[in-house]
Length: 331
Ligand SMILES: CC(C)(COP(=O)(O)OP(=O)(O)OC[C@H]1O[C@@H](n2cnc3c(N)ncnc32)[C@H](O)[C@@H]1OP(=O)(O)O)[C@@H](O)C(=O)NCCC(=O)NCCS
Picture 1 (spheres, rainbow, N blue to C red):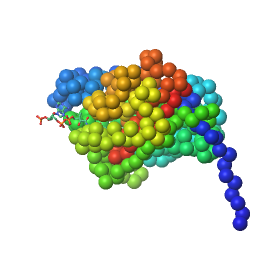
Picture 2: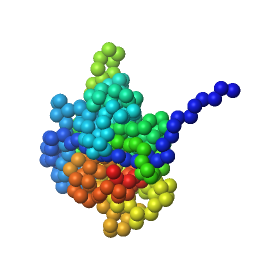
Picture 3: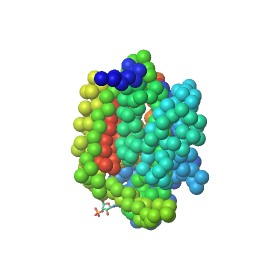
Picture 4: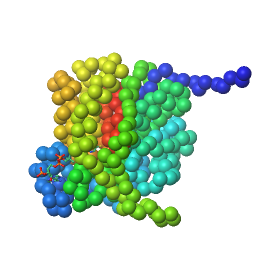
């Protein structure tokens, strides 16, 4: 029998650098409340959101992803030509094909990279980190660029009381490559497609030969809320166990920024000691889906609340219903 070569493998993989991009337009609650008969107080109390950012006309999923990617490459001190795989998580790229990842690869000059988008909505970044870790250790890629980028302001129904205030735009990125010790814990992940209607984006118009327009996001808020608080704590515990660490070993908890009340419930459930920093980027970013974890990480680093070598616990969850969690060491 003819044998097939096994790729040269790296023993360990980890985060080498991080980057983020926040659009400049700040949108306070007061701008949104009239159309949904709401108030700044209600939104703050029920979601924790004070303001969010919306991308401008010239800011797209790919331009924001490109900016975040360039920042992550600089942070990692890696040149674009050394990237051999780009994984981009998004649900708001305007085109079903080609991928946003291919466009970003071209924009940054990652001419040696394979490129693929991941469709796991708010779990997308954590999914992509899991895939990148596995690719590096399996020898499929040496250096992977992982990006989460969303322009959710384009798919929101601004008259829908359950979603109009919740979401924001932005992008975050990480470079993942070979490290001397393992820097990413085993990814605990899953999906339950039987709940596909809980968060779904319906294309209003999808006519052959025409660009897709007026897609709007719909959500069964309470269903998602109950699912998150009843099952994501266990997923976090499994990710800690899989990594062989305890809540005391963690410097920061970085859950998907879906709703401050979900974060608070998970924090209580997990019983973190006071020393653990909790990411609360939702206050000023809203829910940015696949971008929320890297944006929240970036905020913690900018504020000096975490440092190189610290362990963080990340969990993404949302439409699918899909989830993914892992422990990672900061670059
Ligand atoms: C969307 C969300 C904030 C709504 O909060 P909620 O407490 O579930 O709100 P409900 O739909 O139960 O409504 C409660 C009350 O507030 C009112 N209400 C709903 N939306 C409102 C709004 N935007 N402003 C003011 N009042 C509102 C309702 O009419 C209802 O009033 P009533 O008690 O008099 O009937 C919440 O369900 C949520 O965050 N869910 C998870 C969403 C999420 O994480 N999605 C992304 C996952 S990736």
